Image (cartoon, rainbow, N blue to C red):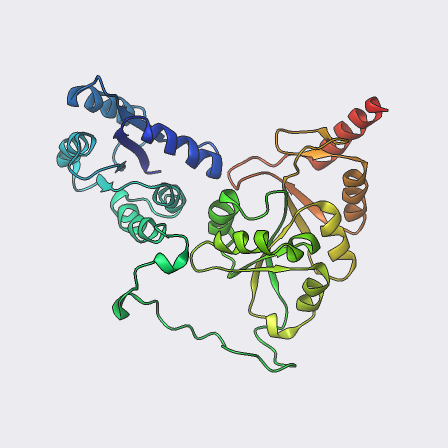
Length: 331
């Protein structure tokens, strides 16, 4: 696996390292080096040398640094100069770049290949709001035209095999956020994210914010449960690879009982509120949650309990037992 080292002036590298692991989960062979105000070039160079020495594979190393021509860049480049057939540097570090690098190293074994792969993602991560502040792209920068149908598709049209492919169905109180927009999207490769919630569908502000969080190249829809059921049965959605997000297990149960063909649920987060008990750092259940999970299990639905793809799945039955014990103690 390619080793990745973040380097910056001040604590930026440490902070972005922490941010990336919040999204992607704890990572091996992933280090950060910072140049403090009272330190010089030799200090940060030694930190880089120590970081390299801690990597399992010292043949393939990628430095992501904050500023071209700055001290961290210069010290990294002096190290890369001795290994420039294998090592690489990319300057202008941002969080999308770092997350993309962590993602790409699952499939790419070369630091130079990953360096090339992260540059477009880093650039795409620069987005203004309001959106009319965006600089108009030139025709040469426009994406290639899609072969997908445009406009209204006539009723009765069958696309693909006529059935939605559910690449992931997730229960997550936060719905579309960093862990989903990066880690899970890169892992499952949907072409559409569908937030299924009657409450969110009625909330124009939340709907707008969710759509703004769309990862590059993936469409985002917000739908009430009844519309999700209709889409499930509509052959015009047959070329859809859907990542479906529910706010809670009750909504997932309602959708599945109404005919949405989901057979496994990724249980990511369930926020604590009064009446619930904590069963993990990210999951809190009340009796309604427990009953809904049990009913879903009786329908043959399996549970994958983890926040990010790199987590080890927890056992749903153990969590239910823990919740039932704690709920009984509340009475």
